[in-house]
Length: 91
Image: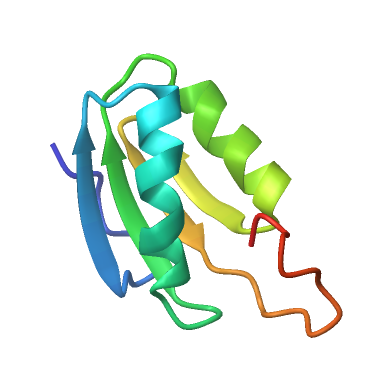
């Protein structure tokens, strides 16, 4: 069930990750976030029981903002592009 839309950021895209676990989830999440313009939000539906720990950890590692989390719904804002960032950065 979708959370009430009160105070949720508008999402540029939605991805239903189903029951994907951490490894597969983050491997498939990265290109979806990078397809967004900086500042846009991706709504991810991730039903894996580890998602409440995995999603904030991934956002912390990559610099993207987890702007709302209510399992299984996660809203991730793509970070601004840092021109000084290394091309090997996790983006």
